[in-house]
Image 1 (spheres, rainbow, N blue to C red):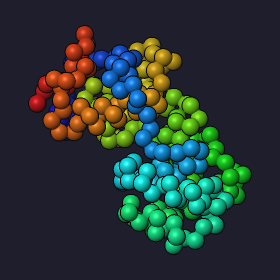
Image 2 (tube, helix red, strand yellow):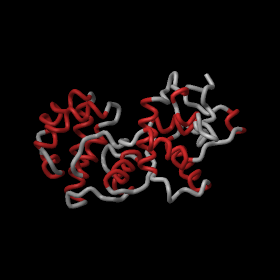
Image 3 (cartoon, rainbow, N blue to C red):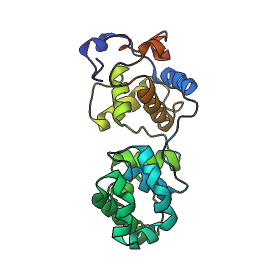
Image 4 (cartoon, one colour):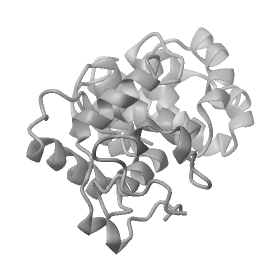
Length: 230
């Protein structure tokens, strides 16, 4: 079960409510938040695009210089490609990352007046931006309640019995549907739930050897159905 996949036995077990899990994780991680550093919507968008296949810490190490030199879309779009690439080199795949950053910046400058749009379809039309990145930007910057499914959120959703899927879009649909069936859709901020699940996945509910003995979700009246199953 610790590979993160939901086994068939979980279907017959009681599943903890999303609102209760969110409540417990909010107590455990009161400072849970997006760990990318940013001060504008543009910086958040670029940092999130850069975070693909690397860590937030590594992105945070390179973005201060990047944003100091080219703080907005127009400047980034017209910056010398080789200079951006030099800054992004520690992240790996610097050429591809540079292309994405400059292409999305050019689109923002020409099609959106240099502003980051609060629109899912428009964001996903930008280079390097998929559903997950768009959810981060719309959830964190614009304040929408949107689940962002990364490897931690997907793993915990399966362990908690909220979803059987390994496909992010399906996990998102399943968890959102569960909040509706639990009657807590308007009570749970899915953006904050995402942050809390990510923190929990990094700290206790790790991919291998999760610390179930220390986990408050294992002690609920309706506990995590995967607790102590190793």
